[in-house]
Length: 538
Image (cartoon, rainbow, N blue to C red; front, side, top):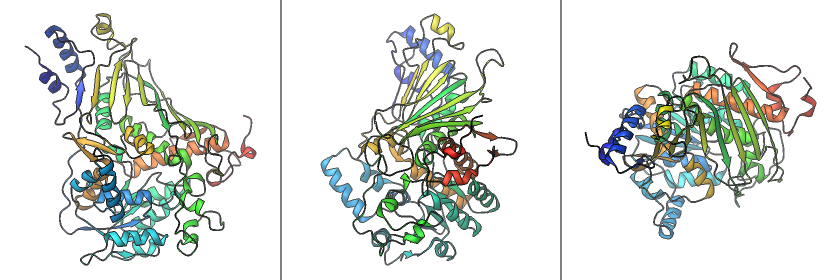
């Protein structure tokens, strides 16, 4: 049988998609190509598209948006609603850079059967911006003064929650208790206690609950799951994943809006359960920098990386977590670290092995973050038989000490320095990004994926999955189980950094192991950087 390049591409999975999939170092000789084809057949990697979901037929689903800041606007665009201001800004960007496909992608986005019926934002400017763009003669959008008014109005079927972290769980619980469907941004909760209450509310409600980890729709991550499950990497003992950002936007120093003042912002509603302090714009717009409202690197960005790997490996909650770091770049009054290292231990993790039974068991997940350097460090999964670099693209190298590939390595059919598989579904599509932070998210596969060579907003796919489950039933890819695991893992990291101690998980009781004399939620919410009074020598 003679193999052609077309046969090779087909052999890589019968891809229904365009993109670059190739053998690095492939030879032109028929013999070499035949050898590689045999190996590819053995690997049997199947690039996987997001599953098809039933359509959203019938009456439009009435959606309310709670929180219309940066992420709230992005989520509305994924639902099919862009502000007039954003459209005009994008037209200018397209004129300056024809490769910027943001507006084109939005205009070509599939229309969802959604009625944007209400907005709730405590900053008048933002609420009016939504009303001005989305309210029409046919669909008068209502502004609600509080989330309770919206949820209990009987005029909303589902809410999208894009508020500061300390409001995620209270709003979600209120919605679920009233039978209103929920899409909530990460991290799912702000404290340990409310993580359990939210799980209980979700399990007891008929409403559909989803957490906004949209990378679960990304092609490379779905493909990575297939690779791992087939043992291509062997036993994975170490994961390295990173955050590397070096600009004000990436460090959460967002614009302080000129129209923000005590008359245009409901400051008391913003504070909620947080410590009572006088109005200030810095805390309102840059809330991610304080534990009272946000969760810093552990809740805001580690959660992305944790869930990216949890959806590939299904590793669950770590048995222990150790964290370190500090405020080393942005000494601007924040109390969350801007450099953070987190080691999560999974001593019983196993997904099979190419070596003798029982030899390999356990894995460490290393998260390394800095907001003071933008050098791109990729996510790496290190197995006995191979190493995988994973982002919107993925690459696999064989390991020189591999058991599975030992014969092929010895015969020169494989080399540790040459990838055995590379996959870049967007190789033929221009990807214009508007900022370093956007590039960061794009590299991690958090902005878009590719279907049939066409760039698709992964958040759109994630929200479509949620809406389809509301209308047709079925399971969402990131529901309460996955959200619970994400939230607990993030809280363990935050606690470890604040206490300077190892935080352990008890699988039997499904609780974080208590530390004598320490209220873990009190520590989590504390504005102290290190609670030295809690540190003991053991």
